[in-house]
Image (cartoon, rainbow, N blue to C red; front, side, top):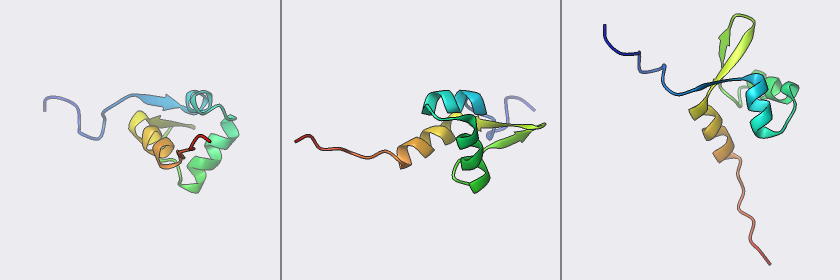
Length: 68
């Protein structure tokens, strides 16, 4: 078998890395994972989040603010 499976593409982030990018606490990221709002892989006792899932999550929550 050559190449990687199709589901293993893109960078994986740790909870701490996601928290840093989003400027929130690790606990907030854990809550998002537990609620199902942010997809994550369980790796041992920790979680990993695909970059594409993080981008989708953030894009889905962005708002457009019009200047006045």
